[in-house]
Length: 223
Figure (cartoon, rainbow, N blue to C red):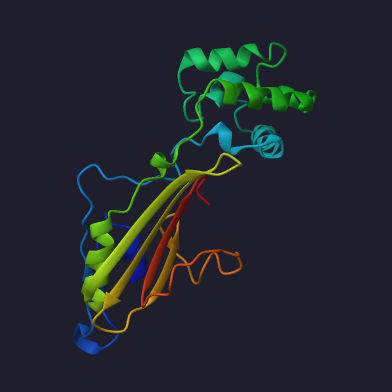
């Protein structure tokens, strides 16, 4: 619960403890400033997160749904569900690249046109930047760690980048010297993990080990 509280400053977590009478109760109050936001699964996805194979899977998933009684989306309606393409003008420009296909079902006989659709969607939208992934405030990390272990001296770093595949990343790390024995926590996309997600990744560096390390990795699209 503490690990989830570390990377979700907007939420209130209550640990009622295992003993009778609530002994060991722990409460983590939200500290996020007004307007703080993290990405939600319902947020529009970006066409820039897709390659040809992934877009084909998505298009034909819609087609299967249509064959089972669902709606047969128009190319314009489908385009409008993506980030940066909700405007009718951009959706129209994308649809104009596929004059022989008006609905997604048309790709059944023209599968080779899916890359044309994807290229047009990317052309008329901007790649997502790391800023859309959000940030966990430095002070929140330190507040939660101090409540749990008593922080004597903290360090914090954040690195935002876009990798060679065009995927944005926001990597945050907090290290602290604490009064009581600490713990190691990892999180990916605002969710605590059971272990180190980079355990099998070779990392080169000369940073000495510290007594406590709290890591948070945010990457789009959300898993």
